[in-house]
Amino acid sequence: MNNIIVKKTKNKNIGFLIFKKKRILCYVGKNGIGNKKREGDQITPKGIFRMRKIFYRYDKLGDIKSKVTKKKIEKKHTWITDSKNKDYNKFSAKKLRCFNENMYREDSLYDLVITLDYNINPVRKFKGSAIFIHCSDKAENLQKVV
Image (cartoon, rainbow, N blue to C red):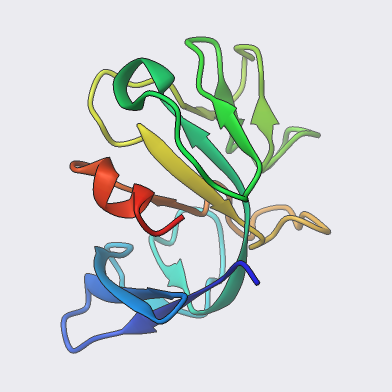
């Protein structure tokens, strides 16, 4: 099973990601872990989530091994964060004229991204988008888990 559990700690901006009995310290939304109310509230939703897909920078990480479906991130790839767009909270293989997250970044923030099943099926407008597990550095640490 590919479930991930996100748990609170005493520090508002730090949580635990628990997967296959492994416990990994992680950063969470600026406003901590809780019940996500709306887009942009900077809350990491609490709960148990299924890993849906891994997006990764092949040019930086090489090939990764995982049973989870994976996709190489290219320069044109984005994630639609515009609540008014019909493709809200979805991956896009092309640049669009709407609010979006650029998946191909200069920093290492999205070198390895795991999309979760939060607000995916069905997608509810304004309820949160781009709910990812991602590493800002040392993506190989998360690679060992997936």
